[in-house]
Length: 227
Image (cartoon, rainbow, N blue to C red; front, top):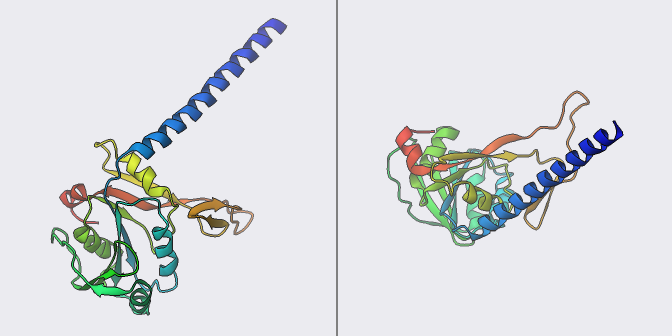
């Protein structure tokens, strides 16, 4: 009986070692392949309605991304606060154009601007039509095939686009989602988000995370319709 127990224990240890080793090895391969993968062009869409208080943090987080082949399009969806004033002051906006394809339906665009202070940052100023309407305008004007949507009160980890890029190596993948953690209990160090503590509202409510970052191929979305 003792020999049998020892044998089972040894087998368990061996399998656990193999399992952990494979996990570590796979993670290293994933990281290496992500580093070697050619950067696909990505358009980050940020729909914003009365987001004056959070836009600056969002822009700073995007600017810290470790990814070169990308652009940011902030869609001001008819805000009634000073969002456009903030964007103009912080970004140094100048009038510009985007390649709108008119394949999706959305409220009329008033103006398009480009930042003179941040690389590849655009602003679409349009009449209010809701979040989906704003995203349609952003998708229609995006310069790149890969599209990522985030809320204005969200912050991306500096490596997030590299992971998304890796996800779309497989041409069969048409969309992917990401996890957004509650900002409370999070700290940003050198562009990387770190969890310091799990936020608690009460003893009956547990910490959870939700998916509010979505990425997809632009042409597939246009074929299906609109957001």
